[in-house]
Amino acid sequence: MDQSGDGASFNPASKLDGVSRRQTRQIESQSRPSAALIHETIRAEGEQELERRWWAIVLSGFAAGLSISLSLIVQGELHALISDEATRRLVAPLGYTVGFLVVVLGRQQLFTENTLTPILPLLHNRDLGTLASVLKLWILVLASNIAGTWAAASVLARTSIFEPRIVDAFIDLSRPTMEGTFSSTFVRAIFAGWLIASMAWLLPAAKGSRAHIIVVMTYVVALGQFLHIVAGSIECAFLVQSGLASFSQYASDFFIPTLLGNIIGGTTLVALLNYGQVAAEIDNHRG
Image 1: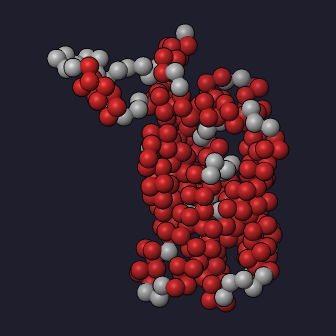
Image 2 (image 1 turned 90 degrees about the vertical axis):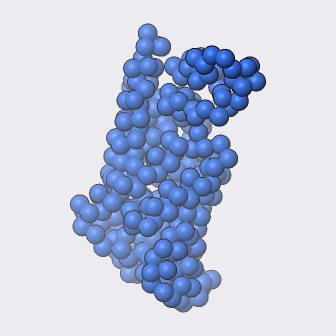
Image 3 (image 1 turned 90 degrees about the horizontal axis):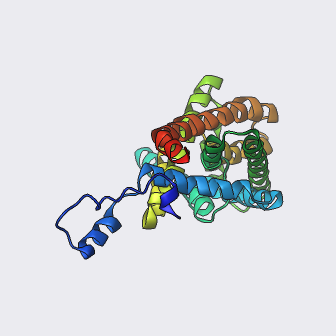
């Protein structure tokens, strides 16, 4: 990416005197990307996402919905295998990270990442055309993500591929997702949206540490029992298709408050605030 157009062309070694050219290159290689450079990297990704064909977005989103089922499956396996409650509380959430590793490293479309990535082009362009493209992307990704979770949940609920104790673990993990009040679910979803969008902001600067960042951030989501619209959907859809909850409960107790919380957590706490720290620099360059 051409850094001359992103407002981030500051050279950390340019103001250092008395260093050789080789030392200057070493300093440049060790310096962290600026906030403006990260912003421009993510904005470029967002522009690419907004230009993708609708069927490619749907297929990628459906694949993400299927892949995220691994978060419940692996976490359920660990939950069932660990008998000590304290150890289970700390270790089982590691299983939650597996689905996100597959989705994010596999470049599959996940709705909560899209509360950040396409929002930056919208904040940059500030026009109705970009807004329409963002809303279209959101609808396609969310619908395909949810369809994928329901397809995966149908397999988990209607087949006997897992032992009864594993199925019981799925139930134990899934029930708290639908037991909170509207307000508590909404707040827990804000935290999840904030963490996942923050993860997306960190990844461009991560280089070889992408997997570590994904694991750490999603582990915190699971450990804090924060609610993610796609990962939580596999849990709630499993309960509905197992006859342990109704579709109306899925919609009112989980889907609506979680969706709103994730959007606010991702767009407000991450996209707007991180854009705000570089807006003046970028606007000056545009002017």
